[in-house]
Amino acid sequence: MATFLRVFGKVSVLLPSPCYPAYVDANVLHGNEISYYTDFPPPQRADVIIICSPSNPTGKSLSIAELSKWVDYAKKTESIILYDSAYEAFVSSDAPTSVYCIDGARDCAVEFCSLSKTAGFTGVRCGYTVVPNECGLNKVYARLKSCLSNGVSYVTQAMGACALTNGYEAIVANINYYRRNAAIMLEALGDVECSGGVDSPYIWLRCGDSWKEFHKLLDVYGLGVTPGVGFGQSGSKYVRINAFCYYDEAIEAAKRLKRYVFYR
Image 1 (tube, helix red, strand yellow):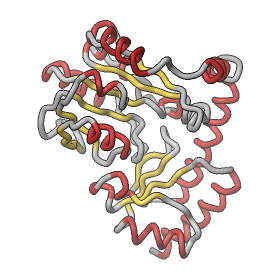
Image 2 (cartoon, rainbow, N blue to C red):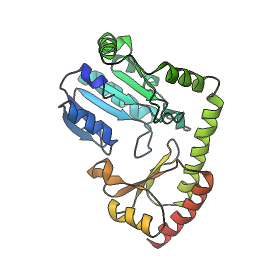
Image 3 (cartoon, rainbow, N blue to C red):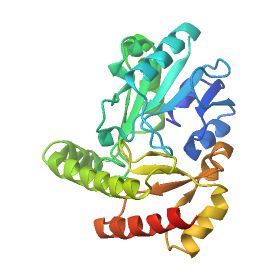
Image 4 (cartoon, helix red, strand yellow):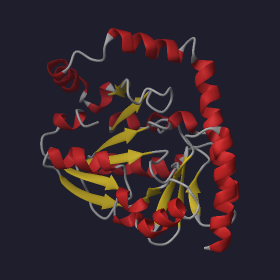
């Protein structure tokens, strides 16, 4: 996504709040004008709208109806949606796994995905960008990309191809493993206000001051979480729980979360 932003020059950008910090960093480096949205409709129009679904950090997926509103809005305002579907493989509900599930999205949306979370390629780095002919940006992006990079190495490409063919059953099993971890911890939280844990390996837990609760969870309960404020000021009352762990660790974490919820 950071590379694709070079297609536009300096533009105005709408970012979700809270959001993955790299979105902010990439746009700051490009000198773009940044504003934020927490829901639909956004507070103002922008040239570019960044959407992540399922979301990092909240774990929330947009429904077909919700995503349709964004596509209609982008077409009406002549904006471009940059759609991050890094966690699409975790979707188990009826939420869309691609922006192109929505009629008209090919006219106004570019989609990004990777094998980082799907197949554990976080350090290897292998992803892809879908730029439909209809949106009118594919030729300029192809030229930009060929000037900046020759792409990932052949070895990495071969690994990616294997992961999506012969190794796909292992990928599905791995994702289901983390889904189970998330479900175990989500159940332990009971009726506490939170999102995620269904279509995402993350649980976004409302808890009070995120730094104070981070220290309490770490120092008192031995649980490592991420302070929500790291994803923007709107996350200052939350922490993010990560299900990327071993099954026995998820079981133990669930026990400790139950104690945390009971005594807080």
